[in-house]
Image (cartoon, rainbow, N blue to C red; front, side):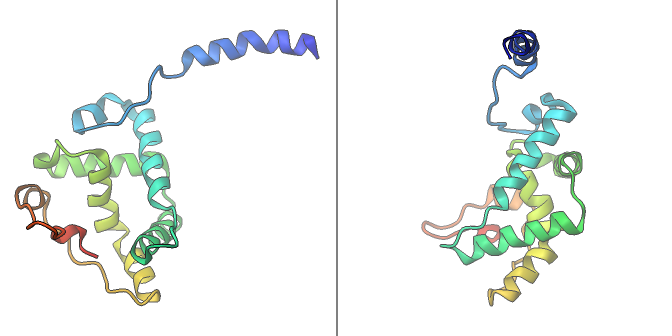
Length: 155
């Protein structure tokens, strides 16, 4: 057993050195691009995983999570595919390059490719269907009145 531990120790040390020194919150498209393909795929799937957590206290959040899960299965999503969708969002909406990858994810998946799955989950739960999302520049320029949500956030 000691011999195995002595042999494994150098490999673990090398593996630890190969890991990124710091994971950080990505704030915009420029930081997203610096992640590179593997970092983008990992970050994108982390966003997807977080968005598919079902919470019992909010039907809208639960419907979104269930719809995204169904979407992931139906579209056979992989990390690289989700990352590519975020890249496409940034490409197609240069005015939204200051937005986080999370916003890009929502723009492409929640309000785009996965919206039929989310609306099906909403319908099954007796909730109203999602409204059409405004273009990114509209949502960034128009601020809601105090206490109101912008159109793209309304349940």
